[in-house]
Length: 209
Image 1 (cartoon, helix red, strand yellow):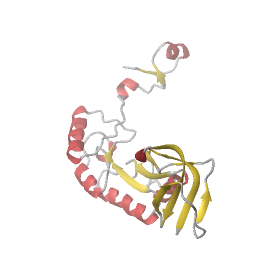
Image 2 (spheres, helix red, strand yellow):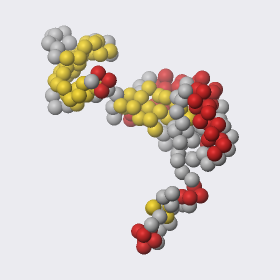
Image 3 (cartoon, one colour):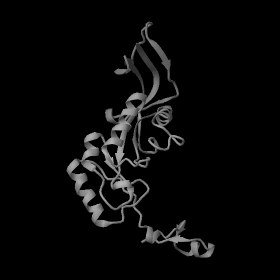
Image 4 (cartoon, helix red, strand yellow):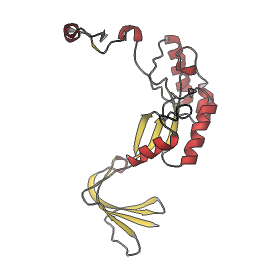
């Protein structure tokens, strides 16, 4: 199948294309040409005049709650929502049940993604077992299984020695650490920055330092 996207405003930083009126020729699902293209009567043609054409977006922080909380989200429903919004790749946080802190959960997510076959699913493994901040998860095994990063999602790793080891492992395996930067003792359940306004309103406050 050949599809011609005609007359759209193309934005593609990887090709140094910035808001140029161009056509895009797609053959068998692959971009074959970009430019001013004369249409062929045998092609399917979509008029994109007034629309912007961009590469697929990437969301680096999604919550696909499968396994364990399929009542909230599954790999399939999350993938469908992603592609409907123009996101072709997503990174799934490890806050599943059980937590994605080992290779079996990582492999499960990739297996489900292959079944659904919509967005590109990139699992993010937990930094610590159970995301409890106490003991490192099996980082090497998760990376071997397909994890692309590590994070305890909304839980800070407050043990500095544990975080130090996590950073050392991340360097070894060439993956980023996606950290929730918070000291809960300092945050103290606050809902606003500490200062004149918090005092005047009588609201529990968080220190800025």
